Amino acid sequence: MTAKNAYNAGIMKKSGEAFAAEFFAEENQVVHESNTVVLVLMKSDEIDAIVEELIMGEEAKRNPTLVVEDRGGFWWIKADGKIQIDTEKASDLLGKTYSIYDFLVNVSSTIGRAYTLGNTFTITSELMGLDRKLTDA
Image 1 (cartoon, rainbow, N blue to C red):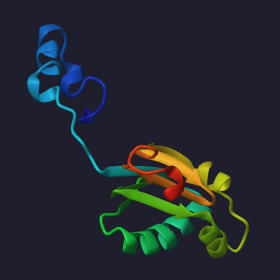
Image 2 (cartoon, one colour; image 1 turned 90 degrees about the vertical axis):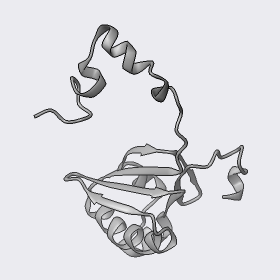
Image 3 (cartoon, rainbow, N blue to C red; image 1 turned 45 degrees about the horizontal axis):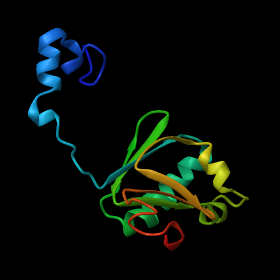
Image 4 (cartoon, rainbow, N blue to C red; image 1 turned 90 degrees about the horizontal axis):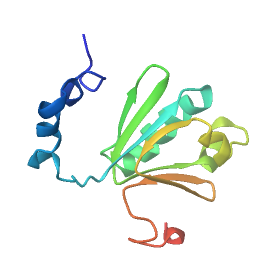
């Protein structure tokens, strides 16, 4: 069985004119705008607690579009607009100092514009610096 997005699947299974025809087809030349952001975190005891308490708790209340999936060794988190994690709140939750750098070690992948400001990690669909100033976040 071949996964739908694996090598030799879908358009990648085609070659020559068949590949070119699909690749350059009009419907495949349109850029689709999306407000969706994704954050993939490596699992650890700290990250598990942060996901279960802060992300699935406070962040889910703030953003009801939030979806969290357990993908074995990773947490896959998707939402519209933005996802924010405050590492000061994580420190309180964990009962120990937990810096933004401790959090960043477990960030495996992102879709969106990721940045840190103070003790907060944010991934957003906004064009920071164009839609609004970064310091206004």
